[in-house]
Image (cartoon, rainbow, N blue to C red; front, side, top):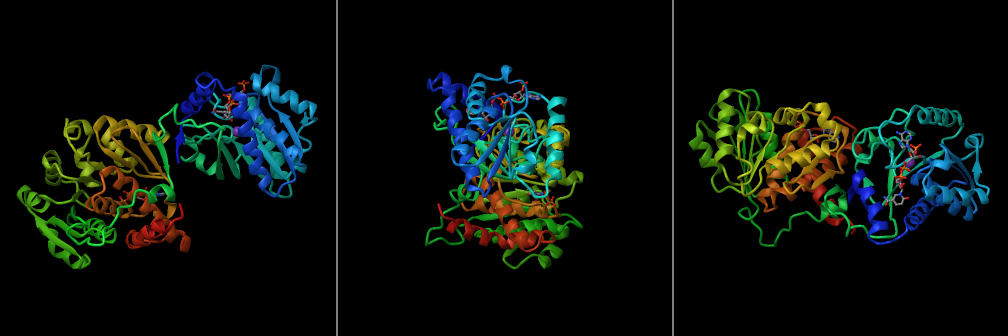
Length: 503
Ligand SMILES: NC(=O)C1=CN([C@@H]2O[C@H](COP(=O)(O)OP(=O)(O)OC[C@H]3O[C@@H](n4cnc5c(N)ncnc54)[C@H](OP(=O)(O)O)[C@@H]3O)[C@@H](O)[C@H]2O)[C@@H](O)CC1
Ligand SMILES: Nc1ncnc2c1ncn2[C@@H]1O[C@H](COP(=O)(O)OP(=O)(O)O)[C@@H](O)[C@H]1O
Ligand SMILES: [K+]
């Protein structure tokens, strides 16, 4: 599903008029009609529509007209000075006035079973002004006093949700349904914004927009989308064609991380998996790991090279430790290994600031996959975690393009940014995943998918989705307390569910 930034929404708005010569009112008519369709499908009879004086308010008034025509009781309440509104908004206001839909008080709001937020959409500039905040607070108080819960519908975005970042004004009304126009806005998929949107329904503008903006620059990864990324298995597939994955990790006291990564690779369909650990860890790791995983050890770079030469995917980092020796080993390996590579956890730590790696990543023919959580990404970039979280899509995009890597910036939601500048916002996963080892499992999944022949970009996007989807299945049974290993064991079921998903 395509995701729009605020500037893309505004650019489409511009192109509809300038390039197509189509009056924007046509798009508004479609938008408002779409909103009315959604509301009319809900079991509500009386609708209180709160409109601003921009085009979002215009959409609200178009919806009002359609809902009235469907026999609903409709009230339109305007916030702001209509005389200073956009011409389209004024035009719709004049019609609504003649239809006697306009009310100048909130008195009827508590009698309605649906409240529509058409105050503002992508046109909000800066923080909400205090006068609007006060109006929203009054509306909120009215809603809270109601003896039943009205259906709250937001048009395009809930007013005060920042369309690019997902930041939300304290006065923003939380919606049960957000009818978004053209395409979902980025901030609706990012927290805290995501919690304010309720169910997201996309409605078209009556015109295709993909001739104006790149159709795939930012995508939301849904089940239908992920299904298209699955690897195909030929009937004659054997362990040689399904990829040999090597996990390099482990250190004294950190045996679990590489074991979980290796086992996740097995559960994700790798043909063969070798877990290579420092010599001192070999015995204990061999006892711990499932029998399907082969084990090996390394004491120097030569051993590391022997384990990794000609392999189909190599992941470095889980549980490797942070001592100088480990750090040098990682840097040396990353600087010289040209095969398919995933770097996670202590492997990322060893890189330090990404600039210290010179042109290592830029020179690679196959981009490396880096899987940092925000803390690790902060160490790679020198940014604060707060700044990363405030614009995770844009910082991920910039990093991936600048350094020629597939960046998996983990979190809620995880975003995958590709060297070409495309970003995939993951649509699976849940809060039950916040438990040690969950990232190690993801590393194993992505490595196994690369080993099965998927390009790094596709493996990362699909791997992140499958990881979250497997956890979502466990979450249905228990909200938290499921383990990373259980998530790994669920991957096959997630793949099966994707395969049988209806188009
Ligand atoms: N994409 C498309 O192709 C199409 C898009 N369409 C629709 O157009 C919408 C965008 O419309 P837009 O650009 O007119 O702005 P919009 O969201 O109504 O906001 C303006 C209102 O917000 C207010 N306001 C602003 N800042 C504020 C603040 N800090 N604090 C307080 N108030 C503030 C501002 O008040 P003012 O500052 O003028 O007093 C005014 O009332 C878009 O979301 C979608 O719904 C469809 O109609 C068809 C095709
Ligand atoms: N609230 C959440 N919603 C969705 N995914 C989450 C959430 N919390 C954690 N995750 C996922 O769990 C994984 C945790 O990875 P990481 O922090 O590297 O764990 P570890 O270092 O313990 O292996 C990431 O893939 C992350 O996206
Ligand atoms: K709105």
